[in-house]
Amino acid sequence: MTTINSIAASAYAPSASGQNDLKIVNAPPTDHDAALRFITCGSVDDGKSTLIGRLLVDTKAVLQDHLAGVQRQGETDLALLTDGLSAEREQGITIDVAYRYFATEARKFIIGDAPGHEQYTRNMVTAASQADAAVVLVDATKLNWQSPLPTLLPQTRRHSLLVHLLRVPSLVFAVNKLDAVADPALAFTHISAALAAFAKEAGITVRATVPISALKGWNVVDGRAGWCDYIGPSLLHILEQLPNTAPETDLPLAFPVQWVEKFSHSSDTTQGRRAFWGRIAAGLAQPGAEVQVFPSGQRARVAQVLDRTRQPGTVAAGQSAGVVLDREIDISRGDWILAAAQPMQGDPQSDDFDAPEPASPWPAQTLLSCTVAWLDEQPLVAGRVYQLLHGHRWVKARVQRIVHGLDIHTLAEHPASELAPNAIGHVELQLQSPLPVAPYARSRQLGAMILVDTASNRTAGAVLLR
Image (tube, rainbow, N blue to C red; front, side, top):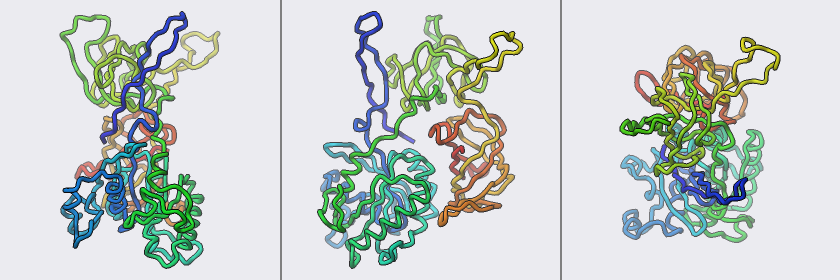
C-alpha cells in the first residue's frame, strides 16, 4: 500500500576533528511533521462514514459543489462523502476502504473508512496494517446501556482485537449516537466501563474514550462542555496529539529488493553497476555497511545509497532507497539485502574449524508459528497449500496444523480443526523454502505476511509471526 514519503532531515554537528560537517540523513519525519493515518472501524451502522463526513465538513475540507451533491431531502447526508461505490450508495453500507484527506492548523490526516460488515473484514485488515491509529466506534443505541456492563457487539470486539494484533499504536473508542438515548451521561458511564473491562481483559491499551454525536457534530471537532459529564478534549483534538508509527530504525538493516535498475554505461569500476530499489523495512542503509544477500548468502559492502530523489546519503526505515554495492552480485526482485551476520564469540584458542558459524540478525526459518486472521470464504484446514508473500518474495506454504482458535467473545483459546471466515487462530506453517522473518512484536515489517489461494489468487489470510 502507498505510504506517505517524508522529507529529508539534516543534522549539523561538529566532527571529531573540530570541523563542522554537514551530515544528511534521509530520516522519517517526526510525529507532527507527517500526516496521521488513522482508520474508523466498528460494527455495521455505528456511524463511521458519518463521522468522517463530519470531520471533513467541520474542518472545511469539502467544496461547496461536493456538498451540494450529497443533499438528501434538503439535508446533507454525511455518509455519502465517503461511500463512493454505487453499491455502497444503493445499499447504504461501506464495502471497500475509502481514503480521505484533510488538515487542521496542527496536523494533516489521512482517514481510512473501513467497512463494518463481517464479510468485509479483509478490507478492514488491509487498512489497519498501515494505520497509525484506529477509532473504534460504538453505537450506544444498539447496547443495553442501562446495564452497568452492557455486552459489546461482536464486531466491536473483533475489530479491536485485530487492531491490537496488527500493532496499531493508538486505539481510541468513540461512543456514538449518545444524543439518541434518554440518559446520555449514564449510557456513556456504563459503556465506558464495559469497554475498559474488555480492553483490560484483552491487554489492549486505549488512548481515550470519548462521547460523540457524529450526526450533530458534538465532541467531534468542537467540544461540548459538560455533555455526558465529559470534560475531556474533542475527538479531533485527541487525534492531533497521537504519534505516528515509530520507524524500526533501531533494528539491523533489512531491505527487500523491489526493482533492479541497470546503468551499464557507467565506467566506475569501484562499485557495482546496478541499483537495487525498494522500501527499507528496518534499520539504516548507509555507505560502508557490510551486508549479506538473501538467499544467496553473498557478502558485499554498500558503496552508495540513494534517496527517492536520487541524492546520496543515509536512508532510514520506512523510506524508499536505491542501494549500490561495491561489486557485482546477482540480485533479483524478491531477494533481501540484510545486515551481515556477525561472528559469535567463540573460544580464542580454537582454530578455524571449530569457530562457530556467524549469527545472522535475521535468521531464516521454514517452520512458522503464526497468528492468522482468516479472510477467505473457504475455511482454513490443515494440509492445504497456499502461496505466501513476504516482502516481495513468494514461497509455497503448507498448513502444518491448527493449534487453536480464538473466541472473540471470551478471548479464550479453544481447540479447532479449521478456521472459519473472519476467525482468528494460532497456526503452524511449513514453508517450501526459508524466509528471513522475525516475530511481529519485534518487527511489524518482517513479521507480517499474507496467504494467497493458489487457484483463485484471492488473499486468504493475514499472517503475523508469533
